[in-house]
Each structure stands twice: as C-alpha cells, then as structure tokens.
Image (tube, rainbow, N blue to C red; front, top):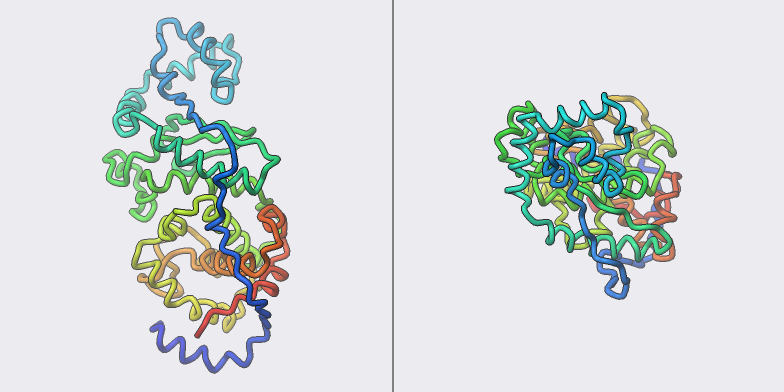
Length: 338
C-alpha cells in the first residue's frame, strides 16, 4: 500500500485511538554516558581454534589433557572415553574445517582491535551492572553453525569466528542462505552479536506473554540494551538495516504504528502478525519489498527509547526485569508524529 494513502486513512482514525500518552518532558540519552572512570581489565580473547588445530594429533589424548584446564568449556568430556577422542579426531582431520581454520587465521590473524572494542563495551556493562562478573571470551570454529554465532553461558562468551569472514566469503554461498542473512557474517556485526547475546541473559525471554505488544517490547529491550553498551554502533548495524531501510523506517514510523492500532494487532497473539512483524525476513510484507524487516522490533525499540528517556530514575536492570509491556507503553510517552 502507498504510504501517503495509508497516512490519509490513518489520520481519520486518530480520534479513535484510546491510548493516552503523558510526556514528562525529560530526556536521558544514556548512549552518551561517560564510563571512563570504570576500571576493568582489558579483554583477552582465548583462541581455542588456534590451540586445538596446533596440537600434535599423533599424541591426541596427552595434548588435549594439556589444553583441558585452559578450555574446560570446550573440553568438558571424559578424555579417557574413546568416543570423545574419536569425535575430536574427526573434527581435527576434517578437510573442510582445516581449510576454514586457515581462512580464519588469514582473516583474523590478530584480535587486538576486537579486544579493545569489547573492553569498552564491557566497561559500559560494568557501569550498569557493577556487581556482575564479566565473561571470559573465546573464539572457536563452529563448522558454520549460523544459528548460534555467539553463545553465552557460565560466564563464558563464545564467538564462532568462522561466521565473521565477510559476507562475500565463497563458502557461505554454499550454505544456501539468503543474502539478507549472509550480510551479517561480517566483522561489523560481531560486537553487536556479542552484546545482543549478553542482553538475552539479562531478561527472561519467556515471561511477558505472547501477544504482539509484549514481544515487540521484549525485542525493543534487547536492541536498546545493545545500543547502550555499544554507544558508537550505527543504527543500521544495531537494527540490521540497510541505509535505505533505515531511512524508510524513520519516515514511516507513524504509519507503521497507526497501522498496528487501526488493525487491532497490538494485542493479537495470532501467528501471522507476530511472524510478519518480528520474523526474520528480507522485509515486512505488510508494507512491501522496500520496507525493512522486523518493524515490530523497530517500534518496540522506539517505545523503550522513549520510556527510558522519560524515566532517568529507572535502571537498565529494572527495565530488563520489567515484563509488563502495557505499563511500559503507557508510561513511555511514545507518540510518533503523523
């Protein structure tokens, strides 16, 4: 549908919108927070792939026993078990993985810049979560496990370095993935994926209900959290938009919001609107091929941004533990201009 036509239709519905937004006139741009006084140790990334592929395979068990204390999250199995040893041996002798390892070494010979960038991101995290332990960070080769580019558990942040070789890396094409997915396999997305993964650990992804508004606010919290921790991250990377999609979203924000209201979708738990507004796709099909994907997450992010700007007394930790999406919306002051 043409956006100008939609706006004309939407204007006549404005008197029917019963949601009332009270703006207290305060702003609180936490992306500009000075965290320079926060003292943390510089991040040192453990390169498991280098350690593993450098061992003497003819003496596998002894070599792995040497690595096990340093990399217990990867080598937590019983090394006396012949099946475990065979699994690792098969991994190390896989010709594809050997080739990918060499490509990773060429593309990522040194991680000092990434270590500095992660240190700055963790400085922000420590500012807002002073009592939390910072994770240890490791890289490894996943065998192109693209659904889990970064994982976080037991205070370990695990980066599948083979998923950040550049969107034009020839082997990615053989995965049969769409271009909008492949473009994320680039170094500019690595930091975002790290902090987005950490954001998911600070909230309960199940709580809050399954209606579209709740899911939009949940996704908005994750995006907002990531943007706070990475204050210099461009919105295009934060939202996974092209420049054209970012411009489209900014210009059509009020149209998208009113479309949700007019079609009574905010409180729907039906699969179709949830999938179309939040599902991974090249665009949001309600608005045509030029629109960006996940417009529900974009609106959720804008709601959270407004909410936190108008409530400087609310901490990030309190936000992430607040699962009342209706309360957040009501108190956000969110009201995009028509």
